[in-house]
Amino acid sequence: MIRINLLPHRAEKRKARREQFYALGALMLLLGGIIWFVGFTAINGYISSQESKNAFLTTEIAALDKQIDEIKKLKEQTDALLARKQVIEALQANRAETVYLFNELARQVPTGVYLRSIKQSGQKISLTGFTQSSARVSTLMRNLDESPLLERPELVEIKAATVDKRRLGEFSLNVFLTRQTADDNKKPVTTPSQADKKP
Image (cartoon, rainbow, N blue to C red; front, side, top):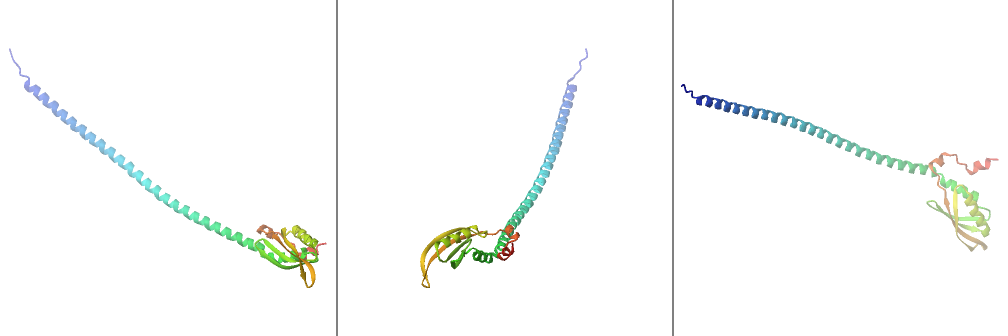
C-alpha cells in the first residue's frame, strides 16, 4: 500500500491563499485610497469654486452698496435742489407782492378812512388808521374780504381819538395776504390800470 503525504501540498495552498488575501487587501487599500483621493479632490474643487463665487458675490454686493449710497446722496442733492427751486419760484411769484398790496389797498380803502401805518409779518398785515365813522371801517372790512389779494379781515379795536381838533375813530385791524404760488404767477395778473381800461 502506497502512502501519499499531502501536508506540503496543503501548506502551499494555504500559503497561496494567504498571499492572495494580502494582495487582495493591498488592492482594496489602494482602491480605497484612490477613491478617497478622487473624492477629496472633487470636494476641494467644489469648495474652491463656491468660495470664488462667494468672493465674487461679496465684491458685487459691496459695489452695489456703494452705488446705492451714491444714489441716496444724489437723491438728497436732488431734493435739496427741488426745495431751493420751490423757494426761488415762491420768491419769483411774490416779488411784486408789495406793489400789488399797495394798489389793492388804494382800491379798497373807502372815502373817509385814512391809513396811518401798514406792517407785514409773513402773511399777516396789520393796518392802523383813522375813520370818520364805524360804518366806514365795516365797509373797508367788506372790501378787503372781497379782494382777490386779501382775506380774513379781523378788527382788533376801534376807539375815539382827536386829530387836529377833529373827533375821529382810531382803528386797527389785521388782514391776511393770499400768497401766490408759482402756478398762479404764470397766469396773467390784472393790475388796477388794466382793470380800469376794461369797459
